[in-house]
Length: 274
Image (tube, rainbow, N blue to C red):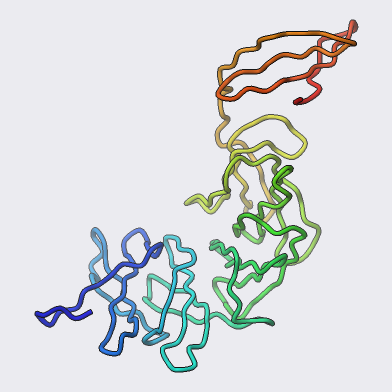
């Protein structure tokens, strides 16, 4: 928008922020959006027009990281074509991503990784190479995910139902999916190191911790604690035993009953929550 002194007012875009620059826009005389990158801190380029797409009818930032942003946008012409593009902060260029079968759709979840862009439609993910957008893969996801992250050449998806959530790793180039984490508490997050982090237990284990999912130099998946979470203080009350079952009221910031199967031959083992 042009001020009375002839200058333009820049409005920053929600989510379009890198380490040293932020995505902003102004509106031209016809009300179309023109994108700019504004330098932050010691970045010498304080205002760089974004090239590659021209003026837009509308746009939204779907995801961003230190290198760029995934942008959904509509053309300013009467047709108003719906597109997705990758904004490169270093070159201030918005590059249109190729349409895939059923293209033009609105994606439910997206994720930016160092190697791939993940865009989910229902129970499948469209994977676009970040270095060469002409390379596209489609990964079938059995269950609609709550969150997706691209880690190395793997798609990490928070799948399962609400009663039994699980984090699954899908190889982007094909192959069987691999469940890696169980009972995640909250959403997965992508770290600055490119790994996915989540508070959960490892598949097949009952140990609760913050876990990091990453890919090694050979592309193999790695899951490790980073770091362990100390146990919460808790009280055990109202202990009772009947027919070989020991039960106790477990009290921390919530209350629930823990059940144990007792044995004269050894220590009790936890039976489960009741």
